[in-house]
Length: 28
Image (cartoon, rainbow, N blue to C red; front, side, top):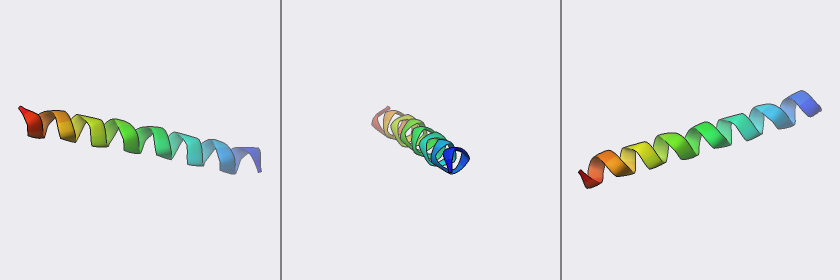
């Protein structure tokens, strides 16, 4: 259970970073 929750949190964090990075590049 804990492992599953950890994976979800990690995926969410990676998704946010990827989205933020793409947004920044688009702005530039």
